[in-house]
Length: 287
Image (tube, rainbow, N blue to C red; front, side, top):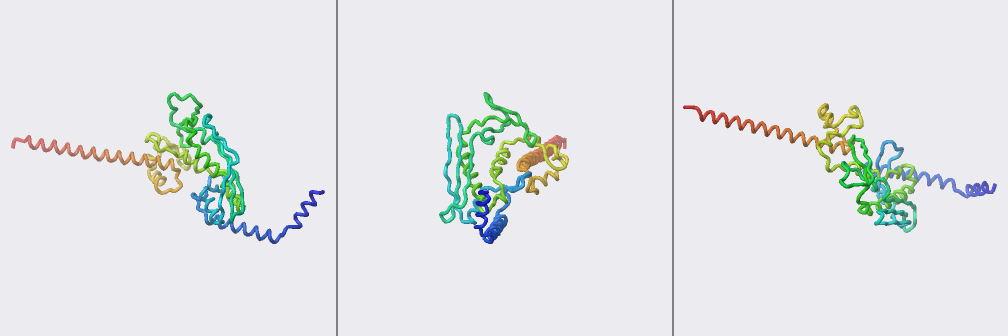
């Protein structure tokens, strides 16, 4: 009964008109934010999620719109270079005119999968640690092994903890958690890791499999032969093409150009040889 009285007492003291005005302002702010931020730069959309994920540039833009300044403090820190374990728990407070407006917390540590393991094409010689064969979405066989250089990621792990705390605090401004999610705020980093194929060979490129559309399951090598126009559309005209597939198509295209140039050069050399033979025959004539 006492709790009911307390609840009623709170309701009696609330200015309903003021709440209505505040809710309208929040709705207007959310609309402004949505119109101002740019997809792909300030926020991203991941298939299967109900809300777009707010990215760091978007969070920074929101702070500029509302005149907010972030400040950070370490809640807990572990840095063990001998055991190669690093962990950071950080609180971010957003201030406006010197007054705290919102707070968020974020943590990151070296045991997270994206830092603890790396994917390699071949297991290094003399490696004796954990290894697991995996097949990625492009049909490539890789091996998951322990990251041999965790210590070089200390600054990256620290920045990720700060970014998570920052996004958490920004989403509390104008109830932006209704519009965006923070669960995948580092999805860009994961995609970049997955798409790191700087050493991709032509054999790896043609073996990549399509995981969508009418050619699902086909390799790029087969697709280039079957439907080169579709490959051209994927490579140069479709902005949404997976970056790994686009890179592989670029490598295949370069090899095709090289093969054609080699073929043309060979034709030219053959013609030169024919001309030499004709000249020699003419010179051997008795008149």
